[in-house]
Image (cartoon, rainbow, N blue to C red; front, side):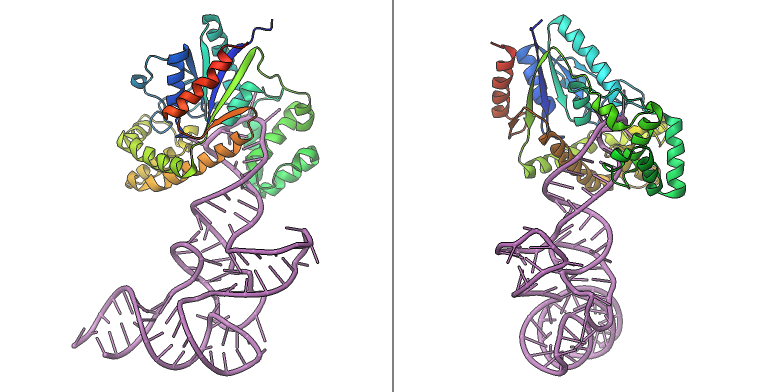
Length: 313
RNA sequence: GGACGGGUGGGUGAGUGGCUAAAACCAGCAGACUGUAAAUCUGCCGCUCCUUGCGGGCUACGGAGGUUCGAAUCCUCCCCCGUCCA
């Protein structure tokens, strides 16, 4: 019963080289990749979400990519379930799971579990959105204060998205968010998790981000977006909210030059990277590396970390 | 050479005598976040000191001087930028 299977997590901000490191380690250790990225689960959104093209996967299977169509809603809970399935499969085949994680919430959902809360209800949400449109976010916040004062105190009055979720839980479950959370969640069992964090110097990360955005444009990002529009993917589809996709789509729609969006996309990506770093800093038990994932030093250091977990004494 | 317009904190830019370390926005930094999370939201953002307070000191609105109890705001001269006339 005490045989814990090794599980490797590579986490870090966008453009820090998680994919490269993951593939490298997978090759050396007989692993397969579990992508933990909320955007890569969407099919047809490839370039801007930085999916690793098949030609660069070096034969390493990449799981949890292209799971749903652009019009579908995908949640952390679904991610968790799909990931658990993959983990079972790898365990059966005796492969080392390597999670490359850019989406902190999804990683936490998988590793720590989620509370037993109801899934989102579009009807309910639409009603709440209507209320916000009519009476402003403060009104909804007051409602939450009546229903669940404890949670209302923790959410900013203008944070409509989180307020909606809290009210939704309270109404659907009939219990406060606090109660549900206190009931606990089921963390991933049976694995010895080893976390490797990539944290390159900020300035270098930022210039890498800038360069990557430019490279994505050269790689045909705009054409991809145009293709999605032509295919009839609705403007309201969630992946059209993603960094870059919204900027490009918007310019394409008004027949502007999408290249003009580059600085804005770079900016948004840098800020995103910052938020990722903020999130991951809190992640417990991370062995931080200060270089990029494709840096030989980082690879060597990561191998050492991975090795200790691969052979538990 | 002349006539206007303009020079404000990292950027854009408001401010035309006190309520202004100077709106707002952007950038930056820090943070929150258990089912939209590449989302959503919060704080800080001249320097400095401490008894960390709607606290003290210093510096700041092109430069130098001046008026005034008090100036980014008024006056003088100078420098620079833009447009137009020569």
